[in-house]
Image (cartoon, rainbow, N blue to C red):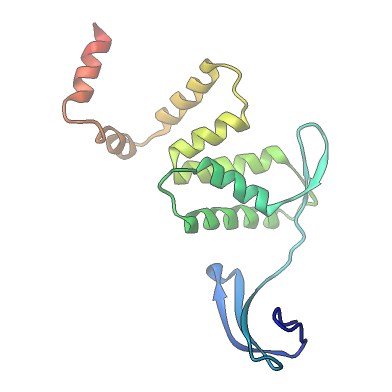
Length: 177
């Protein structure tokens, strides 16, 4: 590994540790010429498939594009970076396990939706609204209704507990009048 400070090729590893849940090796290195220290990350390189877009075009899989789409859906939501990285790693694992040379973008979109559904309902709806390119309010509200019908009793109770005591009762009374 070449030293980023003096460009010497004579560096040695002084420490190695696993990072990203064992997906990456983090190495501390020291240059034998200038004695500067720096960190490198090593990750196995697996061949990722070509993505078949909805219009038939093919493009190489881009991990940064996947990460960016997930992060954009989660903007201003209470989800930490580690959860995003774990979701990206799970999706990458699913893609690699398939072992296919080409995958439709729709399949990757479905994987992202499953991960977002597990992490945050608002992010899921945000992504779904762009992914499904809803043309009207009815299509969007159908997706929200489907999401609400899939909520477990615990999730539903947790969401209703955000309302002040009695507010949900008065809202129901107003809707029946």
